[in-house]
Length: 130
Image (cartoon, rainbow, N blue to C red):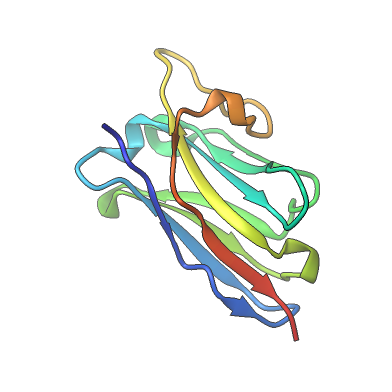
């Protein structure tokens, strides 16, 4: 069964940058739509960004991260990245990578919704604080 694994979370100062990675050992990640989600303390999990399968021709972002976060694929490394710049304390959360697949189309036509993704990682902590 597909398992996705996130990494790259850390403590960073406001205004700093981080790059999160999502991998799936033994599976070709490019076959799957990938969504990034986050859950801050005391809040519900929310969609952050997504990238479509088959070379990632479609991406979407939550309004709160547009212009600061970038999602991308590196198929040679079987990895999806979430580059996060200009981080602010309100970006503090556990970040999750999730995957799913539907034939002939993509989930990534809107900000990702949890119910559209069936394979989830364990999450990686991002803390933005001085």
